[in-house]
Length: 243
Image (cartoon, rainbow, N blue to C red; front, side, top):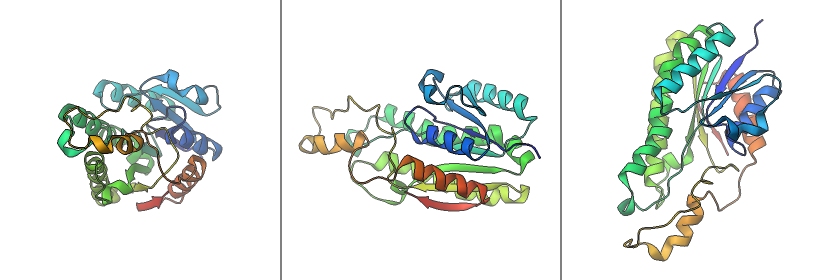
């Protein structure tokens, strides 16, 4: 029997993607760990059965190159695609920069959609699983998180509808509704600042903390990843809530 294979997006050191790569590897999978810059996956280098690939989910050329790399290694099959890469945005609606919001949607929604379309032939060949990372935020109306929540609501709606469309081909579609988990999400927002004209300047420190991923008790990355991998291995389809 051939080894199961998985491609994971967003595997930068310290994040959930890197944790998933290690967990799948521990469970005996061949792992394609990806991020935009391979140097940011140093913790995954030189580990057996983990292959590092450069992949930008917002670039069609980058996605095409990743598809070809996986085909060469697996003979045209992929047992699981994990759309994990994501970007966080915390900003009052009135202060939201449309260009920055579109960039976030490119990572959180349009990128996963492009990945699904590109890798679906390999997933169908393996009768595998597409796992899309959603968020509890997509079900909540939390001040200053409207745009991020909208992007996660969008990907979860797409994922649950895709599940129905792919069932005829023996493909499972898993929507991972993620709660509060220890990760590096938001770590790039170190320079967060409200516009000088913002009506919410009095709440800037609280918004900054959330924009940088802070606040509240969190599930460990290891526990989250173990539950995630077990859901894939059970061949679950539909929503699973973790965190």
